[in-house]
Image (cartoon, rainbow, N blue to C red; front, top):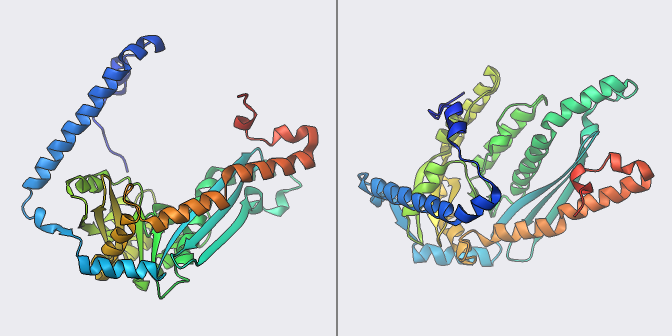
Length: 356
């Protein structure tokens, strides 16, 4: 799949005005100011165009106080969990070393913290270890996709953990079925099939929703600029999003993803809500869409300045504290130093050796 920006690269390069850093310092303020003002102009034009769309305003919903009070009660009594994960990756000449951590929390003080260590060498066939050329070839093959695969493992585990709390409401950080879990097999037998099976279980569960702190779907998030604090809106369904993102898959893989979209993803609605200045996208079962909108917004009111659910911010904070990337790097480097002595620098990430 490709698209055109209607830009000629040679003309683009020739049109860019590179400056000495001291000259740029004199004009930087004005340059940034002009660019920010242009953003405001485009935003206002977008707002005007959207408001002119027939029926647009009628699709916007406002918080219902009765549902909001019920949502606050569910949160207080621990009937909702926030789930998040983190990834610590350390590159070495023999591939990446990685620690994955996943956390689930609620407001009743219940907490789950699970972690696993994986490294590229775990995926290299033992029969090649005596053949250095084949060994290094396999290291390179694995390293090309390993960080993406480790991220996929983290996302898979987050959603697997969500299924442990079947009678509760669950909020996961990010989309319910992230792109990483449906981009193909990555050379790993069963990866796509198992990921889609997990996605189907999440959707059929009916009490799991995803809240996105960021999104590539700028057209959708831009609609949120029109919302006032306390408003939300249904935008589309997950089936349409997935179909718009199917690319570069083998025909067999594409068929699996399309079947998943037709059989399951259509049951998930995609919406946008706003509590403070910044709007956020969320994905929730259509049958409980308004219910989840109130739960998410109620929890976001606990984190009013940012407007993002506090349960997810809480889970993220625990992740960063319990599974600190710097702590992992220091532990790994201390073990490498003990084992390798003067040769330890060979294994260290080059950026760690830079002065200052």
